[in-house]
Length: 113
Length: 113
Image (tube, rainbow over all chains, first blue to last red):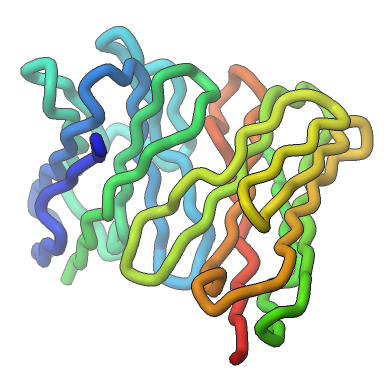
């Protein structure tokens, strides 16, 4: 069964460093998303991406964040200069339709020290 | 920003008993309501996507109803089994704007043998 894959599963980084989280969505899906969950809190929307551009983004998704689909299969989230409060589980998801069910990856845990 | 609320926050149910829990969401500009099951150490898995007022969906022993006019959805589990233990997330999409799919905090269900 097709699945969304994410790498790395866990990354530890120093504050101020750049981090790239990678995702391979399901191949025939057109909509891609990043969500995050800070420990003990809600799953929060970051950004959605369609047709090679951002379609929606939340207040959390500030200038430190960027997304890219560099080669037609990978979908990456870059955090330019990490802060302590960026420590969270980051989930990538994809869907066939704009409000279709989301298929989530297993998450990338980011720890910023 | 949408406010999606779920209750109760956690629930202990005896194996074999039936149970239900609630998701409430703003009814204005409603577009879709999703339910996901999230088992420990796995990624969230879609149960239902509902869009129409009065919608009822069923998957095995699990069913859900939707009232878009008053802004609530119920998830029912009939004859709970240990494998039903998980966190159940609901998420609402209002269409457009910067919220994407907005998740509630979840109901953490524990089935006791």
